[in-house]
Amino acid sequence: METEIILVTEENLDEVVQKATKLLKNGELVGMPTETVYGLAANAFDKDAVKKIYKAKGRPADNPVIVHISDFVMLRDIAEVNEIALELAKEFWPGPLTLVLNKKPSISDEITCSLPTVAVRMPSNYISHAVISAADVPLAAPSANLSGKPSSTTAKHVFDDFFGKIPLILDGGPSELGIESTVVSVVGEKPVLLRPGMITLEMLATIAPDIQLSNSIFEELESGKPVESPGIKYKHYSPNAEVILVKGSLEGFIRHLKTLTHGNICAMCFDTEQEKIPIPSISYGDINDHFSQGRRLFSALRMVDKLGSSKVYVRVTEDEGDYLAIYNRLLRAASFKVIEVE
Image 1 (cartoon, rainbow, N blue to C red):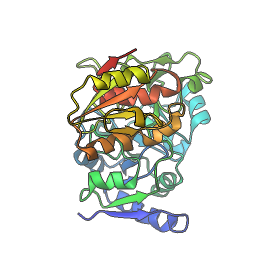
Image 2: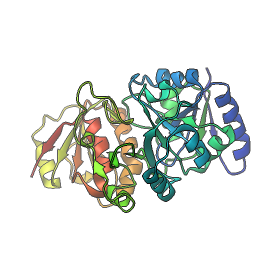
Image 3: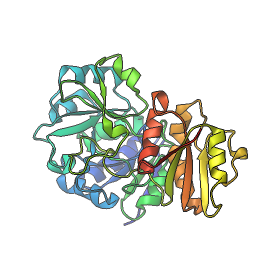
Image 4: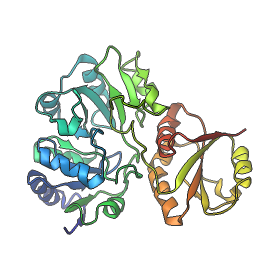
């Protein structure tokens, strides 16, 4: 299969959307941008097309995918909508928030991995929104990366992972946010934050003051426990190199690096810190700007493999507030390996 990349502009949008929707209606997969990361999209009502997503990504069969919609009519067609879900959706949609809701029969077990719930969001990216609207069906669209590897934040990343596996990639430029959506379950007595994102706990609490944090944000899911949301069970976002987090001060990070045998290793740090690092290093953003960290995180993790490193030591700071979403992605990339330094 040949894989075509089309740079999308306002001038060719209608033509490109028509081409993408024709493929989707014929059961094919399309790589498309969203404001979070690039997605690998299929018609959510086509079981065989959804199965192609799992095959192309090498995705575990018990890891559900997020369904993307363009309006509230689509939402009511696929999920049971309660009051708190509606309040959160009205406040944060379109945008990087995924809601876990009780599903309706229109959603197949291929999407939810036989769970009674479905994860849904309404993207704000104008290209993905146009494709969903034109297709007139919800689209199943997990991140467009090989399972377990860093998510794609450019069309080139998608091409690198899926060349010859999918027919079309829509190039909408670098992802605006760069990390996946915030995921909130609204099926229990209280809302639960399952995966942090750029819509933070503090922002959610303005609408849902009783929202709780899931333990899955900070620790590995218990063996045999069902997956409530995409992105919380398996090792994710990881390059081929082993990822090890080093939590603490810059001085402590440098001291720890100096104790290592300087073989095939590298470091990830923040802007302005690279010149102080005693081994090859990659910056993943401004220490005071979680938006810059989000936009650069997955590109930095992909760069680790281009350096050919066998291990990467990543400087991390706190595990709360605006940095929580970044910390969570790195924690999963490292399979929860954290070294604490002074």
